[in-house]
Image (tube, rainbow, N blue to C red; front, side, top):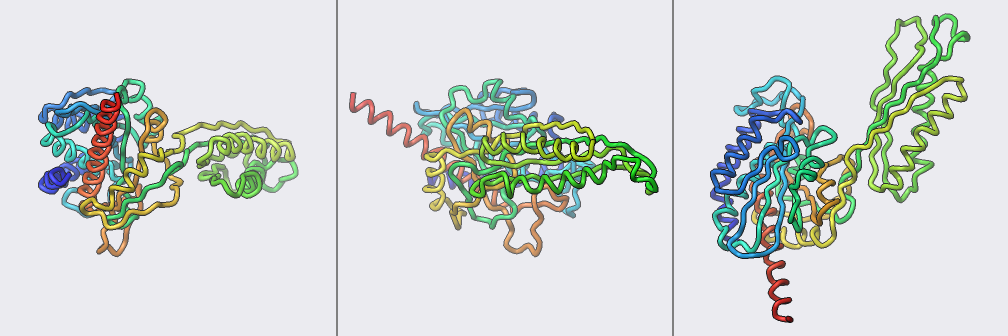
Length: 402
């Protein structure tokens, strides 16, 4: 373990260089071309077995250790966001309207640096490591589903992943067993009334008023229909009714999101939203259309693998605190991997203690403390070696029993 930490420490500057190169050259979800080429070339230079075009634009590399054992998968995403960067940095994005505003450049740099370090000690590895470089995490349906269907998890026993978390202090590892990040769904409602002149409201079915009433009624769903011991969010993010100032709208469009952790609550809200809208429209003699699109499911961490990370993280260089954190209402398509194999997803704090202002993820001034790259690589590396060591010990014990 100490040898791996030393190798990673020596590669820190290279990880930073990789992160800054990717930051300057962002590519949006499902449009990634040069980034997967860069990743594949890096692994090929290390002599790893490499597959490109996995699930569309993903890259999967495999490192076989010098000794037999289990197979660990490590995943990093590499897509950017359609955001114009506002940071004044020497490595600022060169692409107008595109930016790594969520840390995926850092995720990729972390995994590549770890791949190189693990490669240098491969003869000591007791098993196989699969490096999953995923495209399109930011845009549904996401890249994870297609990569899984294309076999990225074949033969994998466990998977680990981390998210550099800009709003958590540098050195903090945040973990949680069970539901960790929420399912994220989207709904669209169109209410059709009857337009008319603003001076003659009695001759209309005012879609704006009906829509406003529907929004008010929807706010009662979480407070009155969901068990208070469960968590849920129903948010209307857009209300569209474009008319002249003296015209009563004949139709409005509402768009929003639902966030849940429990599948039963998810089902309940999908049905209840329509029931509320239907009732509101019946009361006003209006019509409606309703479309509910399910996004990523909840990210649910497995107990043993989460405990493994929590138990070893405290001894990892650069880690100053290991804490159980509350569930996060943001979503992650890492959830799909955890539906197929055991594993865990955790946060690595990336907030610079000297910054006066920390901007959140998806903000045009988002940034991370790059020292978090090394903390993340150390933690993922420690989890990998510990799991492989435990797997090897279990196999040897079984052999002795026989």
